[in-house]
Image 1 (spheres, one colour):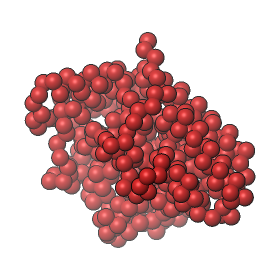
Image 2 (cartoon, helix red, strand yellow):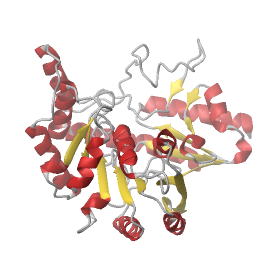
Image 3 (cartoon, one colour):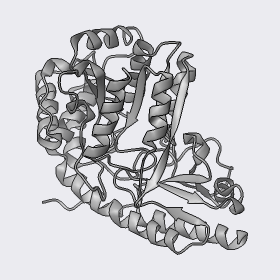
Length: 384
């Protein structure tokens, strides 16, 4: 079995990297970027080989998902998530955010609008403004060392009316892998108030310290398959976010057709590189993924131990994702800006409609995590 070297430092500067070539970075200042959710790791050899094969062929015309890709995805849903699906349920698209936008355009009315929890991945609340639909939100609670929904507040918002509920599992930025009890409660509430669930499960394979396996919410509707659209992609788990390819699983044909209508003319066809990359992830990626998770678990442990020993900081251990949500005492002031000025770029909690928190990307080298911890320590020393 090949042993991958996740300690390898790969220079991403000058590669048009959204993370490393950020135009807001001061000229001449060394910055450590840990905001956007891509990894600093080289991808699996088999994926590189698949991409090279397409490149060497030399023709990059229009491409369509083939039967092999569809069958591989169907097999993954059954093997890894215990969900028996039909091939016809699949709708292939270039990205989950465009898919969520299309779904909200199709099913959210101007009267009832969109519901989501907060804090949450920012397109979940931005989409309401993009489409000029009402946005309704409810909070999350820390219960026994993990983030979960404030279900009483969720029901209050549903009573006010909402057409779609945007669900993120594993949760970004909270890191929760929702368990069966929570899934059952979400489904029951949304059924009770006639609210369709739009589920983003892009981090399903990134489970660090989960209390349960990943549970597909779309597999929990019984005889009401028209109540859900579930999105999946391997781009986060295998560090191929620059090659957009995702799939929506939509059991009900009427819902599927309505969703498709709102993609026509907006979403481009998939590239052959993306299709072959996706196949390689599904066929060959398990060794790389397993080793990557082991590596990120160590990074998580380092940060968690530092936060636990630091006055004014708090962190709930991640169950899933590689995106740490670190809360800070308001007495620290604008902690995100202070970190930025010290050379560490992390995202501020307000971007997710959260307060007094920052989000850090742990999918990088141990040396970078150690450097980030040192910068945080220096800022704390100067502030306290």
